[in-house]
Image 1 (tube, rainbow, N blue to C red):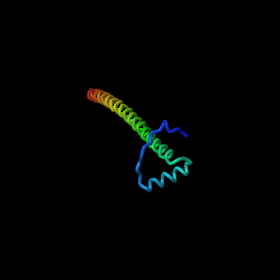
Image 2 (tube, rainbow, N blue to C red):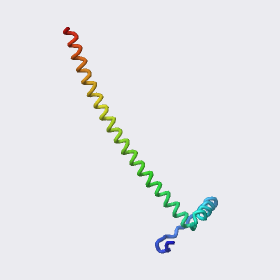
Image 3 (tube, helix red, strand yellow):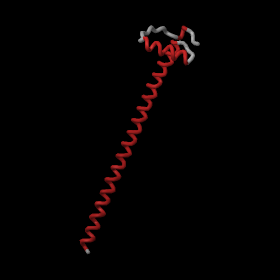
Image 4 (cartoon, helix red, strand yellow):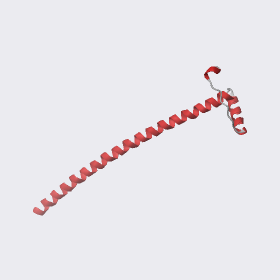
Length: 97
């Protein structure tokens, strides 16, 4: 158990139904109501941090996909130009025959 010197007292008003849930959860988890509230608050911030990491990861994946799409688009343009040149040359050869 931690000592009081490393904590700050916070007065908090909660609806009776939430107070009941805190009491039940604290008992189930074998900790004080205060410890239960602290654990749940810490957990919510960890979820926020994880969500931010996930967001950054998804943005990175999207950027990579956009770069890949651009590369493929450039390759398609190059292949089309080559195809058009070859088609023109073939047509010219046919016309000579």
